[in-house]
Amino acid sequence: MTPFTFIHAADLHLGGPFSGLRSVSPEVAEAVDRATYRAFDNILNLALESGAAFVLFAGDVYDGADRNLRAQLRFRDGLRRLDAAEIPALVIHGNHDHLSGTQARLEWPENVHVFPARPSAPQILFWQGEKVAAVYGTSYPQRDVRESLLPHYRPRKEDEGLFRIGLLHGTVGVQPGHESYAPCTLPDLAAVGMDYWALGHVHSFQVLQAAEPAVVYPGTPQGLSPREDGRPHGCCRVSVDSHRVPTVEFVRTDDVRWRTLTLSIEGLATEDDLLDRIAGGLEKARAEEGVSVIARVRLTGRGPLHRLLQREEHVQALAGEFQREVQGEPFVWLDRLDVDTRPGIDLEQRRQGEDLLGDFLRICREARSDAVQRASLLQALEDLYGRRELRDVLPDPAERLDAWIERAESLGADLLLGTEDAGVPGPDPVETPRPSRSRARTTTPEGAA
Image 1 (tube, rainbow, N blue to C red):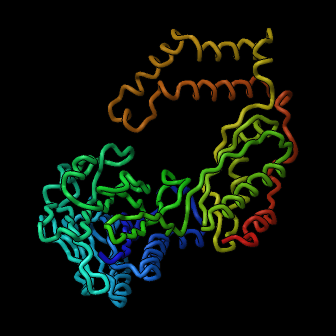
Image 2 (image 1 turned 60 degrees about the horizontal axis):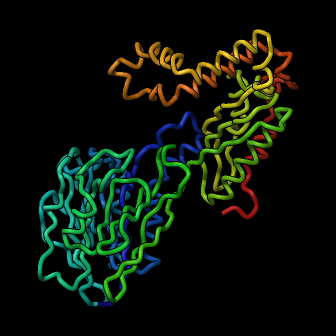
Image 3 (image 1 turned 90 degrees about the horizontal axis):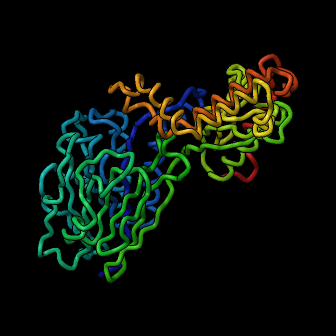
């Protein structure tokens, strides 16, 4: 068989909003609004540059069943680019953009095939005049498809010798953080007789099985939530050799990336020091990613700045220093500044003291180590956590109890120490804003992608 290449993409969520953003500037708002479309453009560019034989879209092209008209027009216009290059596009719809939703009446290019919500004949694909692949697929008739769709995939005898692809939106095995739609297992998929399963639904790149058959999630081309931070997003370029063996290559396509940064206040004496450390962390993240970054910064460690950081107005003022202006492309935007610092004292040493602070710190230690006291604290929380309507949205108290006690210990020590041992430094950033620092931190670093 003649070797060929195809593109496997899924979960475009065109027009989908970024969730979890506290506030953004007009420039950042515009960037996040266009992010899914730019990721889609990157997929199209990859297909054209790679000389792809065809492109697969494995469900959730749109973010909602009642499809955004702008998203439909952008998708249609993008597929016209493929049509002009004689590259077929094969599409299924998933739980977000199921066929029960509303859609505009648009004229689609001739290269586009949308699989229906029922068993159907495969699409036979050609490369350099030779039949190379048979693609099977099924769209969702409605959002909740809780049964396996594999009975819809029935390889035909006449397709033997072709590279068989199953285009499926669903859950293989256990996928934490994703609802179980069209569930199946790896043995289930292997039993069907495909060479490659082009999956959608899970938003992270995963090669569940490399061959016989290959089973692949490309992930979402653009992360839309801080839960999808710390990793690039993209699609897959798949090369099939003359022996029908696929090689999967992940290619980044995202235009904006989430990052969570942990920065310590240890060794810092003034707010100037802290501003410099945050600025350095943000610039490093932008340089590392090579695309625009929306960052959440978590401050940790012990130091004299801890006490000031317990004041919300101080934290907001510090964050505001990085939110005044957005310059450069790619940009970096500080979405949130979280504080998880500790007093700049030796708590273990003070725990030995025969004073009120020592007594309090010893009580906190016992609350963490004594089983009876822990049980008593959990019982006190039962009235809140015992409510059925809150149980699913609040964290498990048994898992979070140590963190809560540690936080209470820190706050209590602050209150008992007052300003004498906390080492309150310098001027109040609320009273002395520094707009020039904001401008200095938002220019694009030389050599950044």
